[in-house]
Every structure is written in structure tokens, then in C-alpha cells.
Length: 187
Length: 210
Image (cartoon, rainbow over all chains, first blue to last red):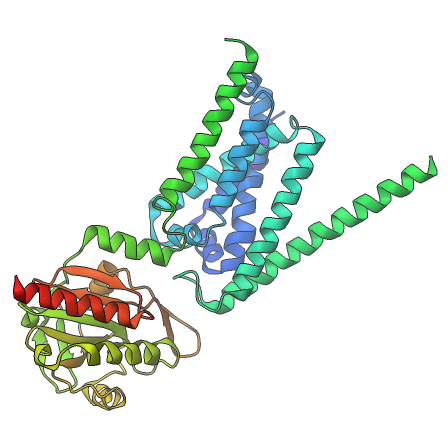
């Protein structure tokens, strides 16, 4: 099964093409809400392939999925700090770290997500829901320019982007809760 | 080693790595924005002011080393700026007023450097001076005409200037306090006027006593 490998590495390679990379990073919302998630998705596919190839490594290092998910949360939260986005544009080392750490977080996620229990999943989901809402509020409400490389206008757009994602996540929860209940009532 | 212990060890390891990531990435939980990180780095590195050639509002052209032996308190501006620069300069004026008159020009020089040399010619700078009661001597306004020198200076001090799409620029602002040999002593919050003034006056007085 080489399909995930091909998908994952092609996403990564496309993101690495200099004009695409520079363009994506020139717009704050695309940088944070398209480029970063795509890097994680690329990692997800690569991880899928790696698990089938070297399952032993994953069993040894991430048996119950908890260490993996902790690192995943840490890496993604790290890249949500206003500073890191900015520094990636200024310092090549940061940029390199971004292209390494985020695919790794994707690999960890695909491995851990299958291993952690429902409670863990709900916890992670709600954690991100509140985090996105907070980020949206931060970027919308900030009267000052948080990033040196992006203007306040772009900051506001990103803020709305986060609010939009939060809204979708809330809607998902609501629809999930209600459909589940109706099914229970029927049986 | 049994499985439980093994898993526990790896769990601890993952927590430590996460902690380190944030610790290193924020200079020990101090700098969460690139701006605070920039100030932090400047204070660590204490770069010396590059030798740029200034052209001031009185049409005088001289190198930055002209100020050798004096402290320099400076800001980066451009005169067609409508938001932060007037505020920055108003605050600079307040610091200026708090420094004892006899020290001005002798021990310390105030300097506003424009990074928009195309529009900010000496005549424009002279007009701008008027708004802030800058005398052009103890508080000078100057541009750097050489493109390379200007870029080098902005790079060295981490001043990021981006066009805002409406004919203006957006940039990070601060007070810069430069020592007698052109070394950067301090980067200060331009909104904390009194704090900056106290620091400047104390430094000057300590220096003259010692």
C-alpha cells in the first residue's frame, strides 16, 4: 500500500515549492489555516504509511497513544503562538523547523488517534474548540498589530477564520449530540 | 522493565519535550510575540549602531559617529505616517522635556530617523519638527539617503517596515537608547514615557558622577 506515501509526500513537496511557499506565507490566514494544517495532513498520510511499514517503532514509542497526542497538542499550540508565525518569515531555522515539526505532529496524530479512547478524543476535540475560539477572539480584539510581518487587517481576517472554524466545530457537536439521542430513542 | 513503567517513562519524556519546546520557543516564557522576542534579542546582543550617513533638517550631512561621546535617544519614523509615528514623537517630546536642559546636546542627543528618504527631504523634516517643538539641534530629525545603509540599519535593529497598501507603512516602534560609543543600551516601550525618562536621566547622572 504505497498510496498514503505518495499522497503525503506530494502534499509536502507541493508546499515546499518556493513560489507556492512564499505566496502562502504572504497572507496570514492562508499561512496559518491552510499551510500549517496541510503540513499536518501530509504527516497524517506519511504516518499511515509508516505504521504499516514499521509498526514496532510505534508500539514501542507510543503504545497507548497518550505521549503522541501530548506532543501533537504541544507542537500545534506552539505554531499558534503569534510569535512563531512571524519568526518563520524572518528566520530560516524557524521555517525549517516548521516544515519538520508539523509533519511529525501529523504522524503522531494518526498513530495516537486510533489508540486513545473516546474520552480522550472528546477532550482533545473540545480543547481545540476552545483554543480556536480564544485565538479568534485574540486576533479580532487586539487593537495592536501582534505580528511584525502582518498588518492589522490581515490579523482581523485570521480572527474571523478562527471564529468560523469554531462555529463549524460547535455545529458538529450539536448535530452529533442530537442525532445520537434521536437514534437512541428509536431503539 | 515492564510495560507500565516503559509507558510512564515515555509519557514523562513527551511532557518534557513539550515543555522544552515552549520554554525555548518563548525565551523562558517571556517573549510570546516576535516583537518582544526582537527586543529580547537586541538586549542580549547589544549591537552597535552601524555607521550610517545622516542628512538632517538643516541640510547637514554627517556620519552617525558625529555623536560619539554622547548618548543618543532615537526613534524610527516617517513623516507621512498618520497613526503610530505622531504618537511616538509626542512621547519622545515628553521624554525630551524631562531631561535637564543643560544636558541636552552636551551629553545626549535626541534623534528621529526617517526610513522614507524619498518623501522626507530636509524641508519636510523641518516642517515636521515644528509640530513637536524639536529644535533641530539637540533633537534632530534626519533621513538616511543611502538605501543600503538604511536597510543594513533596519536589519541590524530588527525594524520591520511593510507597506500597508494605502501609501503608508506599518512598522514596529520603540525608543532606542544608544550609548557613548554607539552601542545599543536599551530598547524601551514608547508608551512608558516616565519610565524611559527616569532611565535616561539616571543613566546620564550616574555617568557624570562616575
